[in-house]
Image (tube, rainbow, N blue to C red; front, side, top):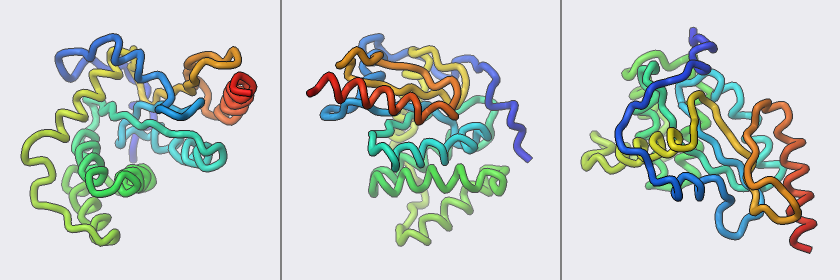
Length: 203
């Protein structure tokens, strides 16, 4: 059984070369055309990420705000990095498919203990969604580089545990540009406030 405490441990840098500060600052802004968004750094093997993922899913469905998901695979976890690479491959087929894969992994964490378990789960997921999974999902290393870049971005932002998430705004109406979600039970309240403030600012 997964140990929930593992998710809260601080981690050392896995990769070299941090992203430029300006890029990190831009990461805590809503996508173009949006006033409010959720930005999250998560590890697909992290029990707390799995626990909070339905909360995020429900919030996004209710408030219709963008959910910008970043990879932050923890060194202590056996298969999380490969899972992140797999998710990136599904993204290349269809972004929704990639997010569906992430959500499915979170929902089935207790059945995935090893890299072999992950490989079997991923193959089954692909088949169920009418997708032919290649023998090697990342032959050029491009997807691996993207996962590492996300990790470096998280380090630049001071991420040290998962999940780490922010409610971010365009700053109008007196809304805070970004506020970290310390308690996911308060996510709805945070979104209510951010949406109300930015809506007022755009009237």
